[in-house]
Length: 407
Image (cartoon, rainbow, N blue to C red; front, side, top):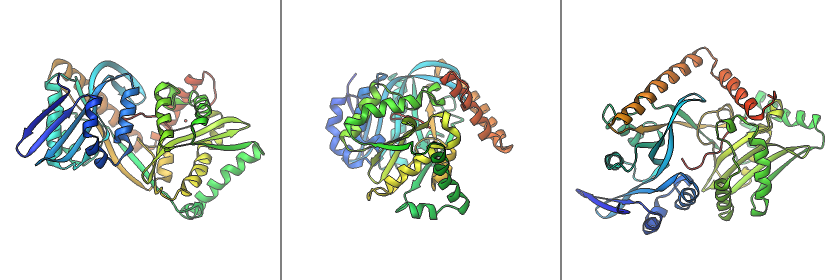
């Protein structure tokens, strides 16, 4: 297989890059187009070199009249395709997947360019380079979303993509401005949280920020001690102390981007928020808390400490809360949009089987969510299910959000 492949379509040229070495030949173009950390060239290279499941890069560059116009950042990897119902996995099977990473379209994401890219994605299936196409968390209503929902034939199309809300928060100039923007009731509740915790543990509440290489071992130890008690661990999510995480966090430290915070109660880790600064935005990567201290809202207490620190950084204007919806995101976020991950299936027996299974499970799941929302039971059911998972993880009766590498 050629690692570099070039083709032409009228005034458009399409270049496909299939090796890490050849990515360097388009670094200058990539650097000029990147605006999001997930598709930053150095972030991308760090992730694909540390994830064992990645087979190779697959990056597509479109040029118009010889001028680079758009770049699609993806990879070929071995994943497990799952039929899920909420947190429950009903069936899974290994598939070689082309993944278009989150925020993986750089440059001009016009309908014309997206149509060309979609043709190239489908060619990956035709050439049997992958068994399935996965477009990670595409913004609803975008050209790629609309085209992916209409161009593939009926048997290849993802009929029930699950929509999720993505939340973002504008950073206030200081904490006084933040509290002033809250309702009187909300201000009272937020300020009361720390007083209640301090009353029960007088003089035994501390917080620490981690931004240097020498502190990484303590961060990993403390965050892992919390994460292993959360429901995300049962789902193989949340913070996980492994080689991939250590390599990525070391990269963030090297670039002076990591910002991590841990709350301690009687010197024991109780909550953490971990993310990184990129441009004018703090991107949340993972957060969690020890369920032993659930009723103290330790995650919220630490969030306020983190917020105070972030407000003092002049170049920061936003907090991006990452994938998925959550009560704390709705509470503090003031910008939101919908995203959906979309699959494209081959027109083969296996492709039809996978598409049918996903269609049925997604349809039933989304109908169930609508019913729960209608009767006001959705958050209660989520809390109960998370508590069950958390108890299974910790192995006790103590009556968590998540680590996500480049999607």
